[in-house]
Image (cartoon, rainbow, N blue to C red):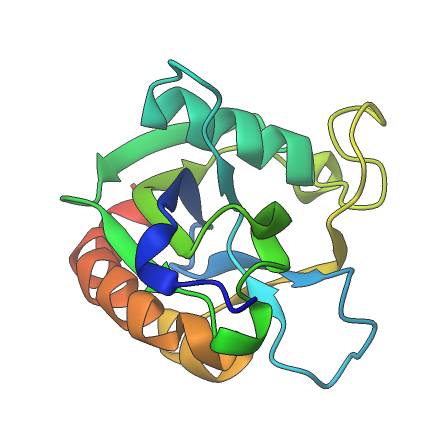
Length: 170
């Protein structure tokens, strides 16, 4: 039986755009792709717990995926940004319960040392790794680094982050 896209809701999520002092943003290469050359990099993001505020969710997801806790909020990105899963992933990805994600994004300045970042044993080893590797990237690089079905959403996120980038070094 084919799943109707319209019958599925969006999964509420929060995302963290973490800038270093050079105005580059943190990206992690997803562990579940297994391909170093694939477009499988993304900024930390994940689902909101029931009743969780998006800012709290962004901070939690960031720590659970990267161990990063030394951050200062620059600003939230206005509104929610959606992306849809491709047809071949409907009913499979996101536990088969969602058509895609609706995300609330936040820009943060990284205030710690890079030794704090640990994607292999995130959250002090209390969480399952989601990233195989990480690096700093320019906002302009992001569209070619991410999976194609997230590119339209990332274009909106990048446009919203560009004016905030200058505040990362302050």
